[in-house]
Length: 423
Image (tube, rainbow, N blue to C red; front, side):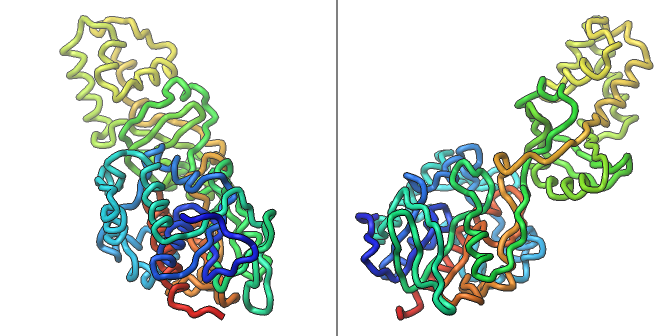
């Protein structure tokens, strides 16, 4: 990065937003020899990126079959073949590892820096900006995009107006607003005539009516969750479930949130958690009976701590208040054993709401992809405006898919503006 630009200067490319997509776009354009200015409203780059993945940064999903990968992007799939033919998962690995940041692949193909530090991802991008002599102005919130005919003529900021031949909008969506993702870009795009689907928290934890889950805060289990609407089963999913002080989270829950949100609009939603999805109720009862037989002189609480996963023995202790947890196993009644089995095969929690944008990993919504040339990420309405990252209406699950959209669209826009001649 070089010294901050001046409003009197003219640039080949102006990028609004110093998040993952914006930094990738700016670095790509600068590598191609363009004079690039990046405006960032915060006092540092990558503020949201630095806290992604719990501070570890799930940098991509290591699915190298692009057809399979794109199947995770819902209705956007038909728009994404061209950009992913230019920059796909293998290119993400090459970009970061080629710049000294080795990656490792964990469960469900999630790729992280070996260092386990999201800040190292930001550092790689910052070095790329510096190498390309990208000029960065911090603490420079944009207030408007100024249109002249079918082009952007300038952007207004509290530091004055800045001008360029091409503009890349990378201001992010509405998730984690404390990092600066306030959704301002959606308003600017609407004012320019674009169709913007109203964002809602897409990948987000669920709040529950039952407060006892706070006792399990931080505990993770592998299980199956069945969601019911007014008592009728709707869909089920299986994987890692995280109990929190307000309800449920973890990959399995996050990736179900959008569907749950739709159900909440129709009635009462219940989550039924099966802690032993690999066993039917009869097999589960036999497994518990065999364990009790082995420890017949121990207290029930001691045996449950061994049987139930990761400290969730609090569940029967809370939900079966008439059950004496100190009773010796040999004195446990058959009816109580059956109640235990039925409970762990279907722990019921009432879902009250999705948590808000402040806890969202990704907020969906954004610009209708029919109004974007996804071969270049250029607006079909404004000939020198490019739109990237979370401003695009692309639904995606957690697991690295969101950041891959940022890397891909940022790169494609950066290459596209590099191929244009100034006017």
